[in-house]
Every structure is written in structure tokens, then in C-alpha cells.
Image 1: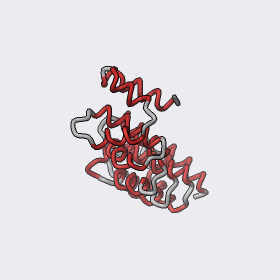
Image 2: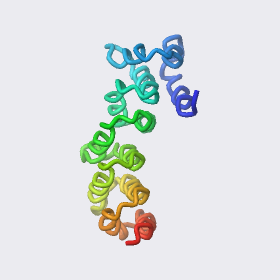
Image 3: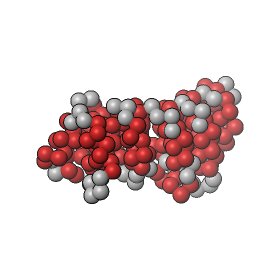
Length: 189
């Protein structure tokens, strides 16, 4: 069992109450059995998350829709696990889905993990989406400065000069200034 699955298993054990169903979903090698959990009515959230994570990490694209839903969940731990599984899954739809979630202003409070996933994916959608999200966060008194900081860090990791203008606009913001200046130096801007 790898570290990510072990961490997920520990977190879900209490929610699941242990038991044979939990143990079966944790150990089965049957991808069809795991995929069935994603569509069967009445399955608890923990079971769907465990099945989607295991399928995603195994490269089974049947997990894609469920993982995107978990990427947009209000529980940050569920988002982080979904992002890991989506990056392992390698589905070509993932960058578009992450960009859509990151740029959705109605869900900006939950955009941190999709923003970080975009930087990790290094997809064509990544830089434009991060530029858009960062630009929106640079309004006075915006409460989502952590999302803005993640955008700056992601843009720095991606190293695309198209980001220079919006990163430069972040310099006057006290919580963002140091990261923005470091990225500008890296970009040579």
C-alpha cells in the first residue's frame, strides 16, 4: 500500500466504521467491483471516494467524473486525494476540468486544490487559467489570498512569460509580494 492510499485509508476508517465493506474496497483488485460502487445508489460518500481514488491511481478512466466531483468538494482532504488520483489517472479531460473549477467564481473558496493541480499538470490550459484566477484575486480586500498565492507559485513553476504582467500586478499586495517578486526574477521580467 503506497503512502497516499494509506493516508486515505486512515482518514476514511473512522467515517466508514471499519468493517468488511471498508476492508473489501481497500483491498480488492477487481476494478469492475470498484467502478460499480461509483454508480450504485445508496453508497456512502467514503465508499465512493475510496473506489474513485483506487481506480484513478490505477489509470481506470471510469473514475474521472467522480474524482472531478471530489476535486470540487468542500472538504480540502477530499480535494487533495482527488487531485492526486487525477494526476495519476492521466485522463486528457483533467486539465479542462481543473481549469473550469479553478476559474469558477462561485466556487473560488474551493479553488486552491484545482489551482495547484493545474500547475502540476503543466497542460496548455494551465497558464491561461492561472492568469485568469490570479487577476481576479488582485482586487482590494479579496479574502482568497491563498488562492492568489498558489496561482503565483504555479505560474512560477510553469515559467511562462505570459504570466509576467499579472504577477507584476500582485507585487503591491503584502501577502503576495515576496512570491511575486521571486517569480518575476525567475521569469526575467
